Length: 206
Image 1 (tube, rainbow, N blue to C red):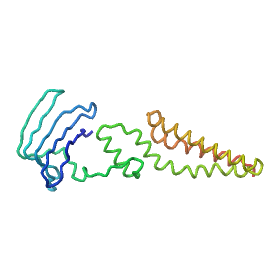
Image 2 (tube, rainbow, N blue to C red):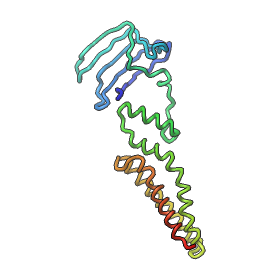
Image 3 (cartoon, helix red, strand yellow):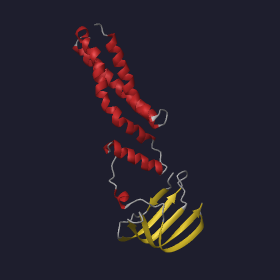
Image 4 (spheres, rainbow, N blue to C red):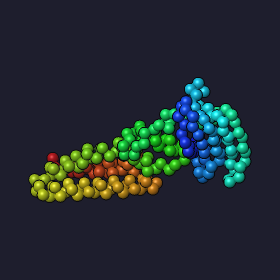
């Protein structure tokens, strides 16, 4: 797993800046090393950042384990290109499937809990299908509308919609707290109501 990196000031290519990188432990978020440089620039040929006039300090709990000044150096593990620091900030609801998938991968590599986001990722496909599921459920009730009346049909439709929302929110909440796998939490409502609709269609007198 890649170590967590806290960047207190992100560098820009070919521009002087102060760069402080704080790699941390994914398990405990403890700071294990600090790198400080007066200037840093991205070197395409090396595919890494080149640091100038700075120092590296290793930490063991709160004590300094090692201190090394440098004039010019690179760190192979620091490979985030300039574009990494120019990412557009979006809410997960505004991301498409690929963007959310990459966002989850980045957070996982940094040791963050991404269970909620994994549920939302699955719902990117599961939620749009609810219109099809409602249509399947509507078929048997529409065929029986002549016997029960239009008002009863409307009430039934509203009740089914509310029940679907309740089951969907319950399933999502259970997925968010890891009581259900993300795939099951997102797809369970569609599966339950889809099977119920198919069963009711088969029970309609022909």
